[in-house]
Structure formats: C-alpha cells, structure tokens
Length: 102
Image 1: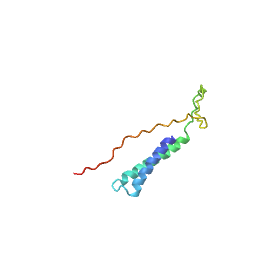
Image 2 (image 1 turned 60 degrees about the vertical axis):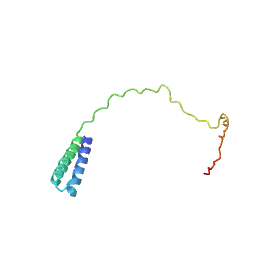
Image 3 (image 1 turned 90 degrees about the horizontal axis):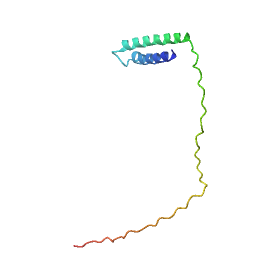
Image 4 (image 1 turned 120 degrees about the vertical axis):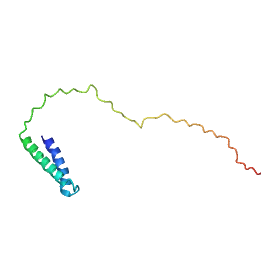
C-alpha cells in the first residue's frame, strides 16, 4: 500500500505543478482535478496501509556453502623476469635526393 501511496503522491505533485503554477493555461482545471483526485488516493492508501496485515516471511531456504573459494590473482613483480633480447635494427639503403636540371 505504501508503494501505491508513493506513486499517487508523485502523480499528484506533478499535476499540482502544472495546475497551480500556470504552465498549462488551458488545462488548469483538469490538472487541478487530477491533483485533488490523486491526493485523495494518496491519503486513502496511507490510511489503509495502517490497517494492512503483515504476512509472515516465507520459510528460510538453507544457505549453501560455496564449494571452493575463488582463486586470488597474485602478481609478483619482484620475481626474476626473463631478459629481453635486443632486436637488430636493419637500415634500409637510402638513395640521395637528386635534382634533375633540364
């Protein structure tokens, strides 16, 4: 019931913004009517929620223990790493720029 009261209160608040602020000049009476109607529904929902019976929770399901804990990732940066071998750099033959005189 409280969820219904909350939803109708939000609708009533939006209708009140449009109805009483003058944003909708032609629809002011309709917005005011919606505001009053949903305000009444909010009040009734709050009133009925006071007399609502609280049901017993469902039977608790047994909790299953995890079969195995998740593995932890460990990074050891102090461990010896394989040495990097340098890659030989080859040079491409470079031809000089020549100008052709005509």
